[in-house]
Image (spheres, rainbow, N blue to C red):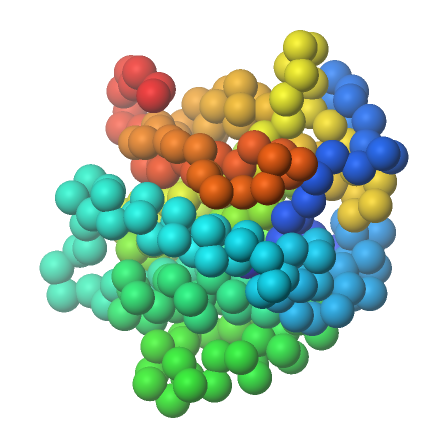
Length: 268
């Protein structure tokens, strides 16, 4: 997972937030005012650019990386008849918050003809370029955009067949999240699909949880659904990621497409 960027500003979304609830996390009705992009970039720049680093210590010696990739691939393959590529167009994917390129390297290149990656953290981008060398030689890698999600504006409308965003939406407060989803709508091909894969906060108060370690928040499932609806996206399918250690937050995948005008959708 990770992020890619065209360095428009020192701000960026945080990379793979593979984490458990920390002792310093706090529940609040709206922790958006606590999120600081500069603090997030500073934290992730200090993290080792490795699978273990971007996954918060759940590296290749654990079951997490493999379970994550298998879950993602299974989810997309199950939906292959629910989204489509425009005739004559390359099946371009976009890996948002790509980190060191782990998701593209192990999964996205198998379901897309070519993948663009967006990542704001410089050490991660440098490692990504090394990790993805074999795929670059095969022509499977498009652009590497060193820019933050909130600063990204798609240059080519309708470019992407599949947009994948994993463990980085928590870096965006709700207002920026909604603007970002508008940009994703612009970037997506007609008939294409976006997948958001994120941790879900749990608890009786249905509050998002702020984590000062990386200056991010973990949204509840209900709040994600409300934001998708507000942004004008429908949920094609959603499922929980299986096979993760019990101490981690629940992880959910949401397959999304833009709603048609005045479309009413029953969410799964």
